Every structure is written in C-alpha cells, then in structure tokens.
Length: 88
Image 1 (cartoon, rainbow, N blue to C red):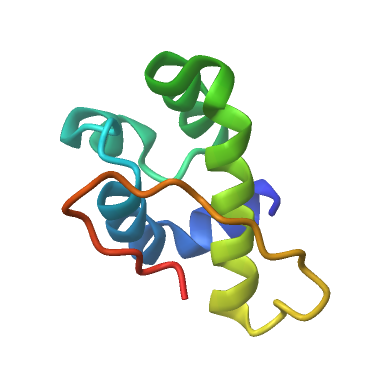
Image 2 (cartoon, helix red, strand yellow):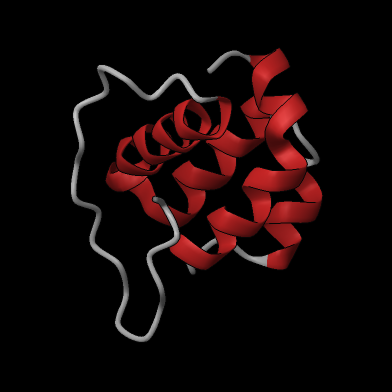
C-alpha cells in the first residue's frame, strides 16, 4: 500500500490496528494521522523486529478492504489472548 492508499484508509485501519496490535497506543494513533512514515516509525518503536509482521498485516487488511485480496498468501498472525481476530 502506498502513502495515498494508506491515508485514504487510515480512518478505518486505525480501529483494526488497535484491536489486533495492542502495543500501538492512542498516542501513536493520534501521532500517525494517516502518515505512512509515522506509522512505520511507531511500528519500529513498539514492535522492533516484528514491525514487518504488522506492515504485512496492514497490507493484507487493505487488500481485503478494497476487494483486491485474491492472490495474497494467508499468514497466521499471533493474536494476544482475549482479543478477537477481525482481520477477515
């Protein structure tokens, strides 16, 4: 997903991001404000080496959201106990 796509989908994505990736804070969400570079910086800060896993999840979410999911390889994402997987 490119910056324009990220910005256009940010309002919807941020809720799913917070539900599926609990280490992302409300402060992170407010700071990101639809900016993909700030999103990547927040992932680096919160997830370190796992940041690519979150980026891949966001790309798959976007593909499903836009109806262009065909051809994506499904990857199981570890969901913290007590949270619901809303990626489908």
